[in-house]
Image 1 (cartoon, rainbow, N blue to C red):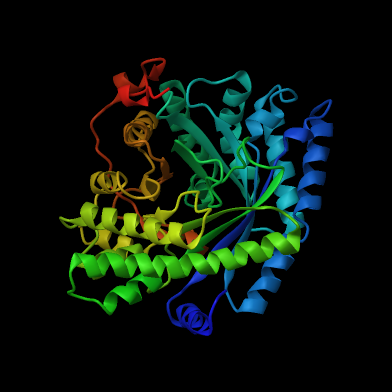
Image 2 (cartoon, rainbow, N blue to C red):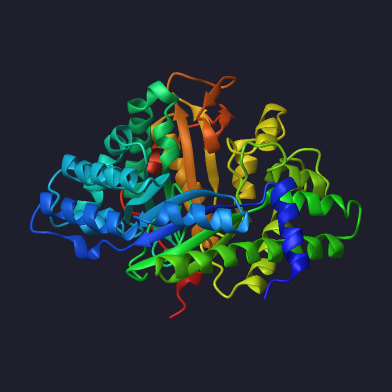
Length: 454
């Protein structure tokens, strides 16, 4: 049971510390939607999504009103479309038609985003996988709510460098096709290593094949709450610091558990996981960068940043797992540059570089996230950045990801504007030395020796 003191404390976190439930995401399996041809498949996809999620947004709003808890986004994730469209799609345009169907279904359900225009190619690619990846630029340029992802590596299989090279080219094309909006199409695409099946956060959400037919996953965020809690123990020992973060994460997760159970019951859909991720927004006081500063850094990027982030990530997870038996997804701390005002300030001050961000991704939840780079960055350089991040995930047995945006027509010193939760970002410099010969090798990087655990 939730006691009156916990209710009062939760209300305080909501009113003054930017606590919110970032998303309720309904995962929907489309494996039973493969029809006799493309048109039949699209019809079945639209019908299943709109029937399954027709009450999702209204239910989220009702729960928000009942409990006074802000629920920012309502989203849908679906089975990786490369699997669904494999037998009926013979061209890139065929896959784009499925993307447009997903977009139409998302609009009909009034959700913010729909994820799952995805392929799982950590070892190799089928013809359908390659067609889907090549179709992503057009799909993201002609839809408004579709998000896309590719899993290009894993600890068990290694890194599919053929896919990484293709993704570098695809990101460049996406940037060009959405150049009128600061290449924002790239903000809706993520490449993963070790992608989880149950991630509710966009742009990387998809409904894994190991999941139920439908499921409710909830993502909770509360960097402002953690920052406020740490202000009260400023200068205390690491033990006090860790205990404070852990207890705060417990309270935040309890809010998510309440919303998840309520949504599951009202919608008649099984509860999946709580993803406790400290996901920042451009709002003042809702920043992972501010937490790092409160821990004792002048700016994110200063010496000690990786250690501070490791501490934060670990304590958030420890607090979360005590509050719910089903904590999953990408739980921990996100460091998306464009969505975190103090990260932006750190870049502007010269404290935070792409290389330092890469080091930080060894210990945080995801990876290089929402980073704007010069529009003339070569596709092979982007592929090299992706390969580096995939290697961190593969060797460290964790999820890593890359969401970089080569902003067409802009360079270092300029700024990209994405709007809303995506915020804005300074264009960050990229190492100009070539990795062409490395990226152009065919095949895959094999799995590390410690992957053999059978």
